[in-house]
Length: 293
Image (cartoon, rainbow, N blue to C red):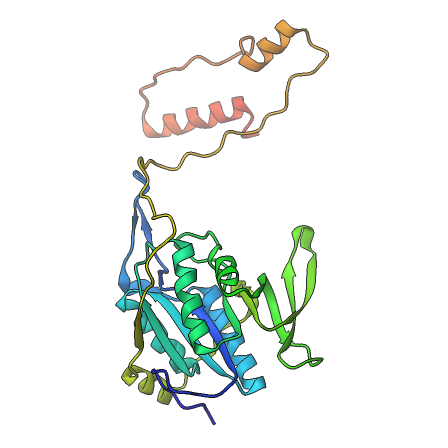
């Protein structure tokens, strides 16, 4: 039997798990010439990492008999995402009224004040968002709440050794894994592949549409404002890394090798040909350069 769905600040029990979610555009359009990003609220929602955090919190809540509280800092449009979280099984949803351009430090402060007021001791969130991708909010949140942090996790499960104890794994370089034992209070961030959000039941979807999401004001910003770029241009790939000239060469020969002054080149040509002859000429030139055999 599912927990009662509420959207206010009523007391739901002593044990509470928190989930921090961010409302982002999942299909942004990027101008290939200027690099400008255009977003559309119709395609906005929770990222895969945030959905994984919600699913893991629901699993832990079911194991421990704890309530799951979802909090988001964002505009009014993010309430659609919060109602989807309620439909999936969250007990309570709150929105802190804020702008998507808020600094990560200010977002973490707003989340910390909300979770502290709700008595949450364990918070799960995605490891990074799709809009900025800095992955700094979980660390800022742990610092603001004074909790331990375990970031970039790929799996979370109760360890069975202590109340509210967890065992987790996170990815390391070289394909290795690090095993962690975590004790609340803690902030946990997970990758998108850690879990897949369950499908909501139709009855809960209908109930969630009627639920009223509590809205709280955001605290006064203290972090550095988000600055717009002074110049936007098309993508420019990195320069290729080439091997240096042989150390056995003289300084003059090394300079010649670096500049390619003595490399034989084919002079540019302007040819006016019909389509079949032009295609054959291109293939011949590619064979000359060694791209075709």
